[in-house]
Length: 66
Image 1 (spheres, one colour):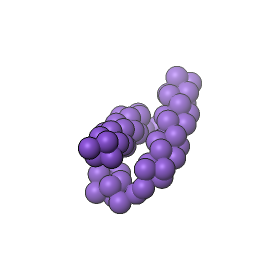
Image 2 (image 1 turned 120 degrees about the vertical axis):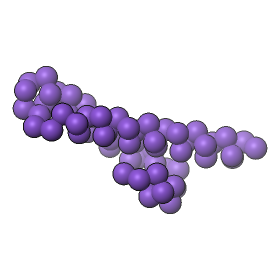
Image 3 (image 1 turned 135 degrees about the vertical axis):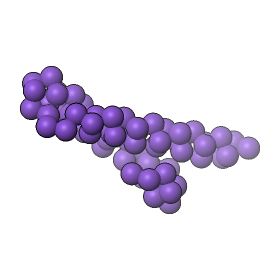
Image 4 (image 1 turned 90 degrees about the horizontal axis):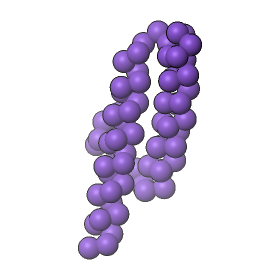
């Protein structure tokens, strides 16, 4: 997911997307532990997407305070 795509979303949409990604990350970790995960790189991709969203949320909230 690109940061430009995420910047177009509203704050509540970002929070919802973050929750979805965290749920997906949980499921991927579970699959990885059971040896059912075919693409282990997907874990890293999801973690990076969560980090991007957290960064954007921090930016939005700091701009709102200023």
